[in-house]
Image (cartoon, rainbow, N blue to C red):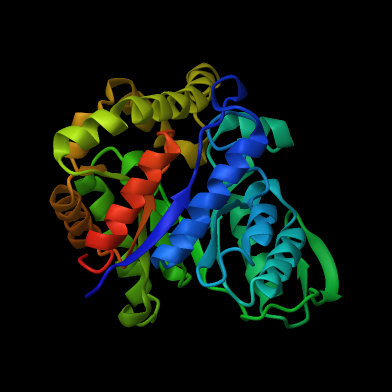
Length: 357
């Protein structure tokens, strides 16, 4: 089975190093237009807040709207809307508007979020994470069908209404991001949502593979057709002529990228150790510890990133597809390298890997 190829934007941004925000948005825009021209299937945009790791994409729907005409073919993914931070009716209105603006090219990723600085910034207790997520997803999906409905839940109550505008798609494809918590994998499968995973956020591929199997078991046990399942794997990718060149070009930038990720999680883990781990985040302290012995060669060896020659990257990505039953690879090409290197990597991938996975 052919594996789809997407691009995924989750940039680190520090003004002192990366210049003004306008330059970063221009860079993201140019790389998205290039992805459209090269034939990638979807362009995913993360959502984060209040910190260098992804925080510049605090409103990815606005960026997608600005790109809709410049990239007229590619589909756009919100990857992911961090549901506990938002009123679900507002999310549904913005997604429906975006679906109209893009001509029905939106895919909706939904996530529970996991960074304490973000929960604190929005004034949301982390102990409410799963309850807010489950209720919010119910409302968003119901609203995007275009049908009138009311809701009387723990966090949100409203009378019969329908969201305007209606979606072009009713509803758009819905994805759920899952990292380390088995309950999220099982819940996503049971409810028939597509799955998004990232090996770099998992302790190892075998344990991630076990959770993907749990997702698939829940999917089929709930009566969903196995042919309809979609699993997207987000991987950091850098392709060059040979392995040595690729490592030299990518390593310092990927190390800095991981340093920002580690910093974003370190304060949360320190708070967990002081105040206790919220029940919905029991797996996260162990995940945080693993960042402190991260090396790029080690990540390549265990298949968590694909850095190397076209043949090396093909081998790593095909192995991920086999182990995780994935139907598409969402490549994060840009993790801080000079833009010309990112573009060269994307072109090489498109020429030699897009149809070979």
